[in-house]
Image 1 (cartoon, helix red, strand yellow):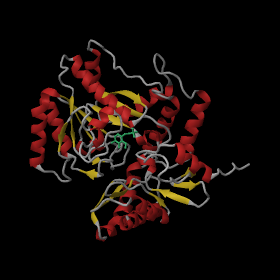
Image 2 (tube, protein in one colour):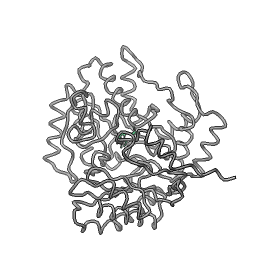
Image 3 (cartoon, protein in one colour):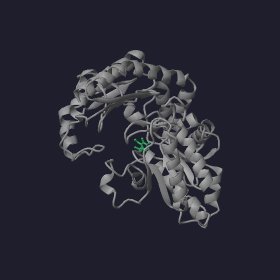
Image 4 (cartoon, protein in one colour):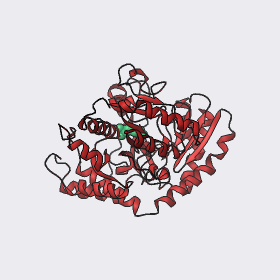
Length: 428
Ligand code: PMP
């Protein structure tokens, strides 16, 4: 028997009355679309009006598409065995196997894995690791962070403090968040003068810095900007020279999105701490991870408090870990680079015409990421509606219309997504 169709009008009325959405206005101002189901790269609307190709991969996570038989089977199989168990004093196969997979695929030297329950929490944990490392070594004054302007690292307290303080999403909190050290956002191309300024800033503040925290190669939600990987080497050298830890937030860039498994590989650099999330479970369940080197783990364990004091209730959730193992297995078991390059070529071709549109400042593509930057703030409603008319789901913001499609989007899907980005840029 087919499921009875939901009463979409009733759902919307209840949603309007009771539900907060991410960065949404007070409930009641804007109607979302109601999604009934999803498979492959398509979201099926609950009101029966049709399907949308997902140009967002559910905020860059659903790299294998929806309702994937392998991921479904991993979830189902684990559900039969154990959906959750506390992680304090207990362990289980999905978490252990996932940790091993992550260590094996990550830049050489990252050995220890903390399983967090969201990207923001994995950044919180990364910061705590770094602060605790210096505290353990008798250097509690090293508790500040250096980051680039234009970054985004999550919505909880420490991550907000390393997001862009001016004009960014968390400007509201600038007076009360921990005060961090900011360098200008890195230019797209390598610039020796900028690199020198970066080196000097690390040196000048080294006495109070626990870590440098950055998004490698792509600054995502802070502006969808790309920069030369050479800056990562500059940071690695400066951090080594002046005794500062280096944290890469690979939550958006990890698992192939930029055309390398991790963006750090573009520069052949290993950070001391690395955060991953989003695509870790193929977008199925909420799980992220913070990896660190033995140096960091051993430093912490030498301290007066020799434990990392963080242990969320749902840490190491077996369902999420089992699906993450399956998702990573799917990725590594295929020619993932070939797929990402294919999407990249499709986006380059499809977005080329956007460069000539009035109001377009820049068009850029890297891996499975395509961005059209406007010279004015986007009219979000008009841009979204234009994309929906093309049969595509996009979520433009600020002056940006962009896509991060699932890697399984075929050539026709990618062309359609690119057409929708152009339409949204034209009408937004
Ligand atoms: N860091 C980066 C680079 C991100 O892109 C995001 C999410 N957009 C986060 C951290 C926060 O992750 P989450 O939304 O899972 O908390």
